Image (cartoon, rainbow, N blue to C red; front, side, top):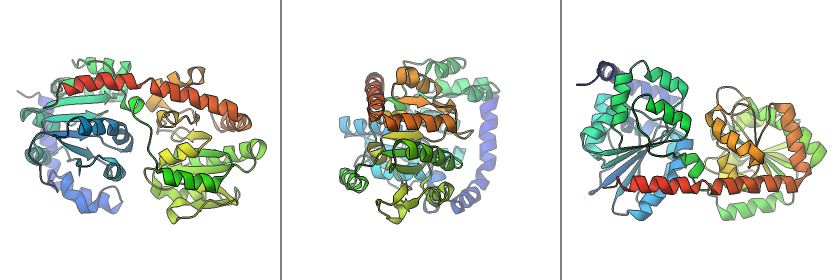
Length: 424
């Protein structure tokens, strides 16, 4: 018998079902949904299901999708007899997966967790193994897949204290949902402890954002841009959010003027559609600004280059002498993954707000293993000045980060062994 909390949840989601389509249409008008593929969000597949075994891997947004790609590629290489279905919840993540999934892998938008959408999706795809990444816990989809006989894995599970407190309002329902998983690998000890409160046993640890591979890039484009930039040092502001471009640009301007005149500032906004807004935030006083989305080249006069394109951070981390990580100088974002620059030997500086990856930053800032934390714009200016003044120090910091990143691959190997046992 289902706990009362699950019965109420299913009833509430069923009651909301008639509102789903108009709500999705409104989101599509704001660019939050793909208007041509709304039926997928309602569980109606746009593709046929191939014959044979099928693995469904769900990752909600860009960060989670990037982190699970190495695992998807390994599955494709080791078990070409299986169909791989990737689902995501955001438009940007869908674009990323379309560009980087292995040949033969399929992509669909994730269905809403209404009873009707979950039933339609699962009835069509009939997965043999379901892999959820990080904090995606959808009761109707999870329990529905289990009822159909699928094995389930929750990888790189990240459970915050806020989430655990919410779960405590319905502990019996949460216990039943978590019990459906055959394998749970939390990111860290804190998440493992929170899962244990609800009876979920974990088998090891895995943080896919630590264990992933270096971001790819187009080598021809890398060579072309290096020719454009020449010998100029490069400061990259990576994955910036509203309010951060002006903060980082002002700090970089002061540091560049005093330590490395002629250095180029590249700004890569987290959401590429903010390219023009990011350029306006820098302002005309910094110098000439070029936008990548317009096809504008970097010239000797270009002071700021706005990299407002999707999926090219691997290119810009390779070009950078030092990266400033966005999402950390404004509240409520919590920082972004410093392993991305570390895997490429690029030294990284982050602001003080890194609660989404606090343990990782703590590990990486110990003895300067690839990342440095600063407490605000003034400290950012001084740290940029130091690294631009001493390229050898910057390179050594980046090399320590790369060594740290390479050491994380063992965790992925251990996780692969456990996941392999669940494959059909």
